[in-house]
Length: 439
Image (tube, rainbow, N blue to C red; front, side):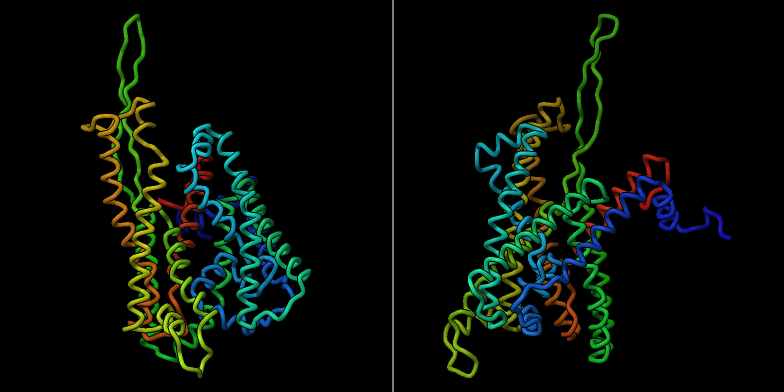
């Protein structure tokens, strides 16, 4: 029998995690919630041609992104069809409104009580957003002939069911955050991504038959994408900070200094710029689908728009779509990062706690220094996100494989959630003097 020291570090950490009753309970609770989520994905809503719906999703990248957040529920048109996307939209809207609206900004400065009120407003905003998105989704599917003619009462029932499904998933995600391991909303999305791996394996067999060399190249590119994403998610720059403290001993005042650092992440915006860019890129195509002439008739202006904004078109026309997509991701990354960074107000926080950056004067000079550093870091992070966003196009051009797609956004989400969850398990094990997952 192998000794404990000879076992791999990951296996030892997993055994230690399940050996602790409270940690084992958290892990099993999280797993149980994910099982319930997967059942909800397969509870269907009426009146939809599922085969036509699957073909429609394959042609629209934005809907594919929404299906990613719902864990395949949207492709099945289940009660959880919208997933947690309305909640994500509501959270993004609130993050952008807090620094703009004075009353919300005042709430954000009230500590934990203010944050609870902002969270309550975020949850209330989810309901109208979910209703609008549910009705919009029904209208879109109806215009494509995927949903038949429905009575008004049936439409209201479906929209309410979809909204209730979203709120149920948000509640389940918060239960995971409170009683399980990791960020609950992220874990729900992660569960959907992992569930789609089986379908990807099945398509891999078709890709091998289509082009063995292209398939092997595809695997190499996928592995390289994974490594780059891990590196950039963890990448940050440490800004040294010193704190001056005063203490009285024996009637005299002594000054003591402590040092720490501020970790400024290269990719502060996460995947939000990609979501914004995809939504903006798909709007012209969705709009054109209402006004274009049917196939076989003389094409009009809207037919051209529909074709230009097709993510599946190869070069040279595809360069227009993917080049614009690249620039939008870079722009949104800068915009969102600057908004979030200004909201953090690090110079004021440092000054209030007696901290300063060595060699930099407090106040406006510190603010200018941090802004300059953040802009340089954001430039690298924006280029990284933009390259991740266009990876599917690059992989398709290099490998010639069409039945498989490197879902770089899915990899970005999965890696981020996995690393965050492992760090939480690491901290739980370290507190109990066990070795963790990470070195």
